[in-house]
Image (cartoon, rainbow, N blue to C red; front, side):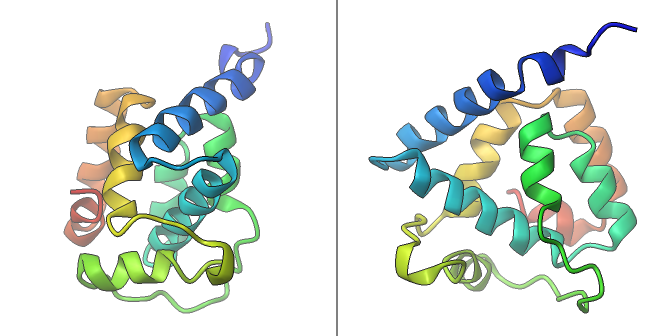
Length: 138
C-alpha cells in the first residue's frame, strides 16, 4: 500500500491551516496561532466522552489530530459545556502569560477548520455527538 497522501503532505496541510487561521486572527506569528488551536482543542475534548473525542479526532488532518490528542489525561473528569464566553476564557488559560487567543477563538478555529476537513465527514461526525458538542463550533 502506498503512503497515504494525508501523511505525505501533513506538514504542508498544517502550515496552510495555521497560516489561514493566523491571518484571520490578525496574529503576527504562527506560535500564537498554535497556542490558540491547542487551547480550543483541549477545551473541546475535555467535554467529550473518549469515544466521541476519537470520532472527532479521526476526521482531523494528521497534524491537527496529533495536537488534539497530545498530552491528554483521559482520567480527568468530563467537564460540562458552558456558554461561549466561559469556554473562550478557558482557551486563554493555556499558557496564559503567552496566550493571545482572540475573544472568539473557538469560532475562529472552527471557521478555518471546516475549510480543511471534508464537509460530509464533518457533518456526519458532529451529527453523532451530543447537541452541546455540535453547538460548540457554531
